[in-house]
Amino acid sequence: AQKITQTQPGMFVQEKEAVTLDCTYDTSDPSYGLFWYKQPSSGEMIFLIYQGSYDQQNATEGRYSLNFQKARKSANLVISASQLGDSAMYFCAMREVKTGANNLFFGTGTRLTVIP
Amino acid sequence: KAGVTQTPRYLIKTRGQQVTLSCSPISGHRSVSWYQQTPGQGLQFLFEYFSETQRNKGNFPGRFSGRQFSNSRSEMNVSTLELGDSALYLCASSLVRGTDQETQYFGPGTRLLVL
Image (tube, rainbow over all chains, first blue to last red; front, side, top):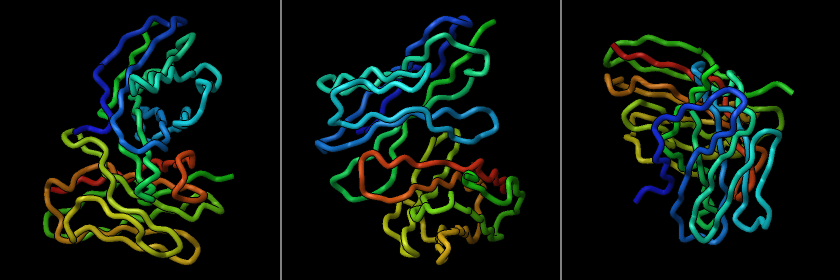
């Protein structure tokens, strides 16, 4: 089974509008971390935001917020006031703690296009 | 603080050759992980090094190997290159390992094309 599922291959948003990118995850580990990364066409993965499984509050970082619904195993990224520079691929990722491994499991990504 | 650096940025090789990619982590970071990104398979974990020891390995053939030096710099090597090895190879570093919140910071990647 896929550990991270991103069901939106592509999304369009009007400049200055908000957009939600979906992410669901699957794990039996009670302790895990969820991450969102942005990948522009240059290829570099840019860290955006982190949410821990035990965090009571949704994470926020500037225009980015994470809508964490633990019971539904979803961790959607919300980008407010979209800018043209937000056009990129966005990846949701998870790290499980119980295995002791440090690797991230990534979803297939969502390509966001911001329309002027 | 300087970010993760990877060299070279672009590489063209032919089938059967071998290649070595280099990664310098953020200063003070001791964990280095490597990922392969292809259009078909997406982002896949290759291996992780911490304190010069391989701690974890993904599901890749033995042609893929790596090492880490005492200054935490890491190299990965791919021997007997195949067309399917064409990919973006990303290196990521983190300060420690084993916690849920430790963020991995990525380098710009090395684009490898195998002809």
